[in-house]
Image 1 (cartoon, one colour):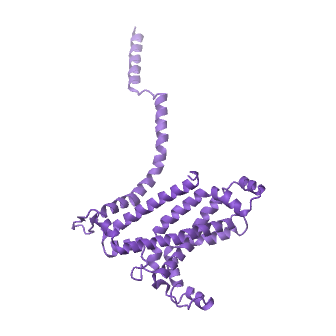
Image 2 (cartoon, rainbow, N blue to C red):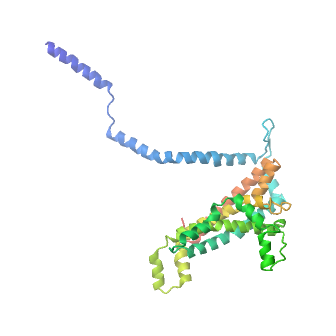
Image 3 (cartoon, rainbow, N blue to C red):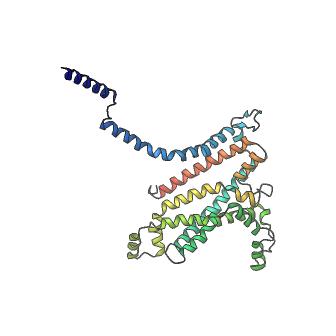
Length: 328
């Protein structure tokens, strides 16, 4: 009887311990936790980039959008007056804004097409493997990684009154008198700035096209050869459709970059003479940081952002429609 009573006490203690121990999770619960962890993993990897984007891009963009509606004062004790759309209306009636916009458009037109054509041509020339291919890749890509500040001062020296361009055109080729003041006139100044933009950007577009050309199916090229297609016909019918997404990407990025030109203009001409070579970003900089008119400068920045966004959407739609929706 004693043993049974003792056994009964032990059994009661074990039951108490078992009741206090949490039951192991069921199989379905473990599976759901595993699925939740798997689903959260990509967001954990994306989180640092999203936070950085929010701090360095999204917040300044929203702040600039807010400032564009005010006569913004940077002094903490001063009150910023709400102006509504006055800064935007001022921009559309500002002759210098339209001059800067036209200069930005001219720069975009004169730099995008040469960078695409020359970049694609160079990519076609060096796409075949050869002992000199790595050397040419480095030489053509070198301007891309060179500082904008360094090459801007270099081109400013080349296009100066006593620079190498005047020496070559005047003393060597006898095309001009050799005394052209390139940076003292709107059009010659823009030519010098565009020359820098093309020279610096060709290597970038060449590398994009070179990567795209590696993916052109050789079977299609061989089939075109068997059908008697010449080199131009193979390029037009086989190569161009195969690299169409790369052409779209390069075009969109170069157009965006063309409207965002700043450093070369600021360092080579400073927007001069008398603001005749100003582009939108140098004019925005002038208004915001020299005239301390942050509201008007922000309005110009917002207009430029909207314009570039709309241009990008139109380009993507046109390219995809032309390619039958194949470019994704």
